[in-house]
Image 1 (spheres, rainbow, N blue to C red):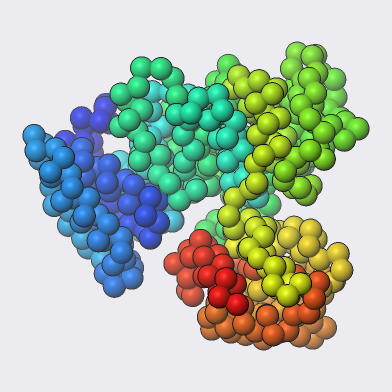
Image 2: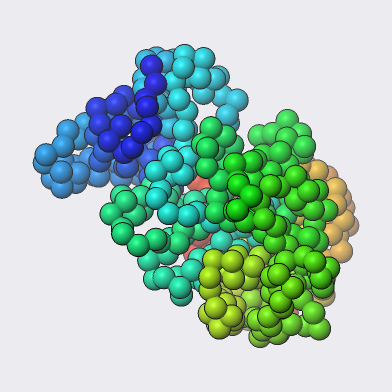
Length: 484
């Protein structure tokens, strides 16, 4: 069996399995389940996590079921069936559709089982791509994609207050789809896409109106067979783009330049340096950001006037400048956003200063490269007390170990299967201690700190095990710091 995805009415009375409920209140799993529920699907929600682990998520869905019954008395709103702690084969073979959470590997035997039985497999983002009536601007990359997405979102909201920012930022775009289907005027939409979400768009014959690629570094090798596989996943975002659509690409990144050579869309580049005159895009010259299209260059603002500082944030700003101009934003709007945008929580975020010690929340640094960027930014005095470690992504920690030795005076290691690898990579030159809770980590770091030290949470790993997700990890850090 399989559903014909002609329009949103296709889901009425359809039997749909949601695979992977997740713990984000507005994330892919819960967002998809809510949307399917109100459109009349008969839904099975299955997750390998137990009912106890997913208690809050189950409660969220159940409360929406009761609410939808009251809101839509003329519809059949079916009570969802929960299968938790396991997956059952018949929930993937005897259904009309499977909606896969991006946290579920595409190689899953149950995903493959569904496909073998002719059952379509979608994600919340692939459904959104199929039904959204307006152009979509999509952003991906290993680092910087969340900040770039948020910057573009602020620019678009200045153009149109109804602009939507969603995707891999713990907000499913399906939360907005029904409202968009009622709109008469075009609404700008920017989505952050992980490589896993891009994988789910394979069968969707639609490319983003603008695709943005910030960079590609080694990551998620616990999910991909090789770095080359991960690169191919990122590149796939451009596969369905037409020659009239646009691609915004990082000229300073060798892998992105190589990907760009195969992109069919109209190319705009961004670079810390002056771009060749024949190249369209955003660049820095004499400390000022410019945008050029068809040979005409426009000054945006001096880099020093940006609220966000750091080389990586200049890259993010350049990507947002190019995208904003292509999308029709004025120079004044773009400059104003860059002067006022303060950044996102959990990304080198200043939490507090206590007794001359600065506390930084960089929980979204889930790869060694992300942690290296934070250490190089904050560690010029070799006065960092680093909180790191957690769940392994099968990434090498050798380079990170070298940077830790050069920038850190002490390391607090969080519990997880990557922690022993961390200790080995650091060696004996920097003292380390392992803890079993975030509260212990913060208290230990605070006891070791002296005036002018930086206590930096920048884990370099995934959060699974000790925490629900990276935002839970960052939230526990912030709470512990505020209690000092």
